[in-house]
Length: 150
Ligand SMILES: [Zn+2]
Image (cartoon, rainbow, N blue to C red; front, side):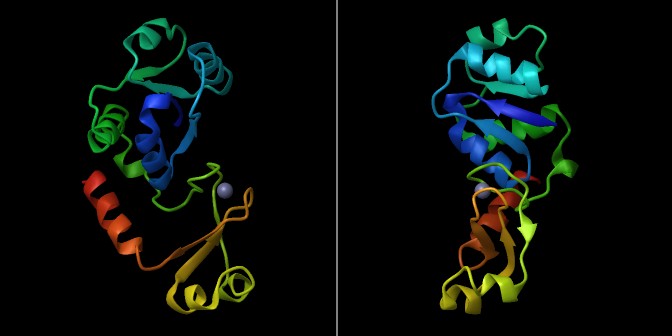
């Protein structure tokens, strides 16, 4: 299942990507554009805007109830039964592409020496070239992910 998310749901969009879901987010987009993208790509529209949800004919749409991003994510996962579908840390949070494993050898050319020393499980975004790794703040994110998927 893939998503397009309205401007009010930026934090939820980011964390859905961290959970591995394919999410398009635009910091600025007209309602008609969101609907057009949802229709064109068969994406599920997530919105906090009741009026927009009412206009989402022919589009799968979920009206997000909470203002709290953790609850927003739980609503999405619960509504579409996606808890088991999550693949945390498999997607670039910047450009939404699936990231590819990167050997330590190849990572050596792309990251600072201290990162290479401390990081593990390197991965590369094929679109923006950003390198991801499990490092110091990873455990905090991992525990947040565990709470979201509980
Ligand atoms: Zn990227």
